[in-house]
Length: 475
Image 1 (cartoon, helix red, strand yellow):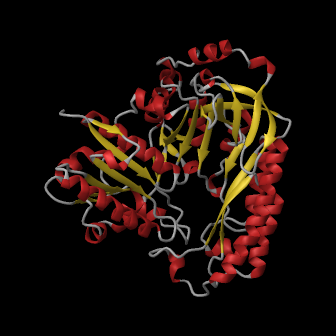
Image 2 (cartoon, one colour; image 1 turned 60 degrees about the vertical axis):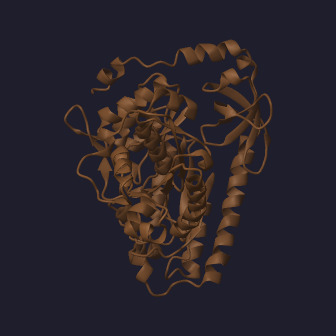
Image 3 (cartoon, helix red, strand yellow; image 1 turned 45 degrees about the vertical axis):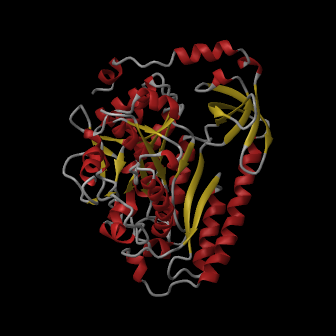
C-alpha cells in the first residue's frame, strides 16, 4: 500500500455533501489516505461542491486559485498534490472546470465518487472527467463506514437513503445535477445504520433531495415507504433519535404522519419547505400544491404530534411575484409559526425553466422583501427560543464546548445547548434544565437525577446492537 497519504475534503452546501464527503474518506481509507483538516499538508485535495446558490461555481474557481498556489509550492518541494472537484458543480460543469482551472486533475460527479481510487490512478496520466450517471449503484459498491472514522465523527450521523428528484421545481438544478429519484434498499441502509450504531452513533438524520418520496425494495418483496424504514431503524437499540430531511409537501403520506405519532425516536422537528404562500407563485414554481394544502398538512402533523416544530425554505422575488403574492407568504408564516426558516432571494440558475421567465423582480424589491421576511422569521425564532426557558429538555451531548468543562448538545428541536458536564457524557442523552438564552443557542444545567457520571457509563455500555436486528427488521 505504500506510505500513508493525506486527504483534505472541503464540503460546500447541503448535508448530503457532508455525507458524501465522509463516504469519500471511507472509500480512500483502504488506499492509504488519512483525513487532514488542513489543505497545506494534503497529498489529495477534494472540493465537494454545491450548485444551488448563485455564484456557487465562482466560489469554487476562486478556491481553486488558492489551491493552485499550494500545488505549485508543493511541486517546488518535489511533492505531488492531486486536486479533485466533486459534487454538483462537477456534475454541471464537467470539462469546463479543467479548461478554466488547469490545476485540477480529476472532475468527479455526485454519482461516481465510489470510483475514486480507480479515477485517481487514471488521473496520474492526465486530467480525468467522470460525470456520467453510472449503471451500477454507487451505494452498493461503497465500503461501510470505518468504526474509528465514525467514532471520530461523533454521536450524530447523516445517512443518505434517497438521491435525485423528479419534481422539477422551476427554480432548481437538482434534477439535472443529481439525476432522477433513486432509493436505496432498506437492508443496505439498516446495515449501514447498524455499523454506525456500533461506533457510538445515537442520532441518525436520513437524507434525500426528496427524502419522503423514499420507496426502497424491501426484504419482504414490497416497496418500503419512509415510514416503514423509520420503524425498522427505531428498533435498533442504540439509535435513540431519528430525523429526516428534506421533504416535499406532496409526499407527506398518511403512514409517515402516523410514524410521527407512534415513534418516540422520531424527533418532533420537521423541515418542510413551502417556498411561497401565494398559489399563483407556487403554480409558477411547479410545486403542484397550494398554500391551503400545506397548511392542512401542518395541522395534521400537529394533531399527530402536538409538540411538533417546523422549519421551512422560502424564495423571495420569484419572477412575477407581486406585493400581494409576497404578503400571502408573510401570512402563511404567521399562520404556521416556525421555529426558524431559511430564506433566499431568487437567483436565476442557468438551465432551469425559471431562468427564461419574463417579469424578473428588480433587485432592490427582492432585497426589501427579504428584509421584511427576515424580520418576521427572526421574531418567531426568538419566541421559540424564549419558550425553552425554564423547560427540561432531553439533550444529546455531542462534543466539547469552547470553555473547559463545557459540552455542547442538542435538544429534540436541534437547538444547540451549552452545558457544564463531564466529558464522559458525550454520546449520552441527559435531562437538562434550560436556564439561559442567547441569540442562537441555549444554556442549561444538568438536573439532579443525572449528575453522577455512573449513569453515563451505564448508558454508553448499553448501546451495542445485536446483529440479529437485521433479521428482526425482515432483512
